[in-house]
Amino acid sequence: MSAVVAFDLGKVLVDFDYSIAARKIGARSSKPPENLATFLSHSQFLIQFETGTIDRHQFFKAICAATGYSGTLDEFSAAFADIFFPMEPMIALHAEVRRHGLKTYVFSNTNDLAISHVRHNFPFFVHFDGYILSYEVHSMKPHAGIYESLEKMAGKRGADIVYIDDRVENVEAGAARGWRAILHETPEKTRAALVSYFPFLSR
Image (cartoon, rainbow, N blue to C red; front, side, top):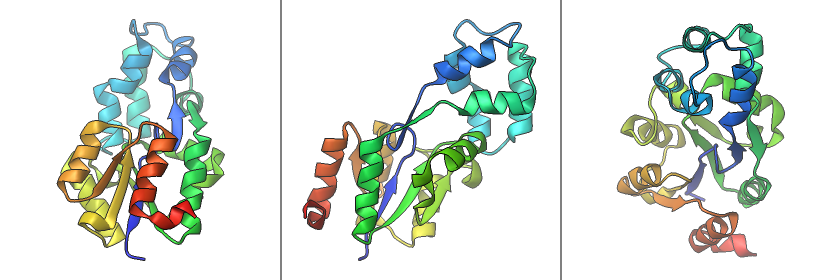
């Protein structure tokens, strides 16, 4: 079977809520920004962390300087990463895709604290053929580099890649490469789109 299926991670296989981290980190901070959750999820520090230009120690140091956080790196890591919830219908859909013999990949803008947490707490995460993670390939969606990394790892191009993501700009970048890109809105819509490409999933 020639096609492969690439799954985004956040908001596709696991949901997340940065306000959980903000409450824990803010409680130990002397000068948190007014909206710490937004700061944590959209800061330039996070972009640098998720493109692998700084490591977890440098990210921690930058956040401490910006917020006055007084905890240890281990305490910060636990607070920052423990924000995820399983999206069970999508995890089940991935398992169904695997049962039918299709190769699957995680294709995610992420960081090593998040991945360490997901790897240790979500058993489904080990059941992929490969992982294209922004901090490892030094490129974030929707930039071309990370898409090229998936094509290289999977040995596939164009319509041989079916790609599921919740962000329009990321889906559009995949579609521009000829990928069969699916905008994830609900598990039902995503499953229907997959069945349209792979009718055997309906059996």
